[in-house]
Image (spheres, rainbow, N blue to C red):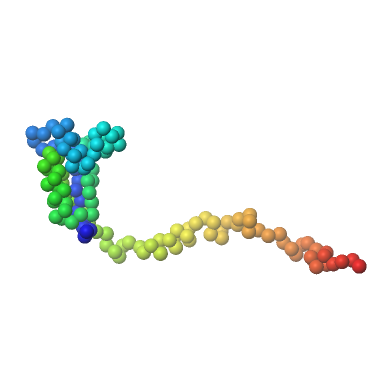
Length: 135
């Protein structure tokens, strides 16, 4: 399916002549939610709250209008919003972001780790002389 720049947002508004219980039952059947399931009931309560909830995003205009019509048949009023695309020139390629993260790490040679410190062998006796057989 072609990805678009539209999203469907529901803000809890109901059409005239519908009460919240009827709309909740219709939306539960529309989204295949079981009202006896606690997780599904929580999702439905979040959907019917007064806060705007994104139903679906990344849709084409026609698909977004189809979602809006289905929600209107259930008694819920939702809106279709256009999402502006982020210009490609402002976003950084992933390789550059990874290299920047790597460059700013604290352990990037600025802090010595204990496992990398070796004893200074110049202060000790020469190994070959110490290992010689005194015969």
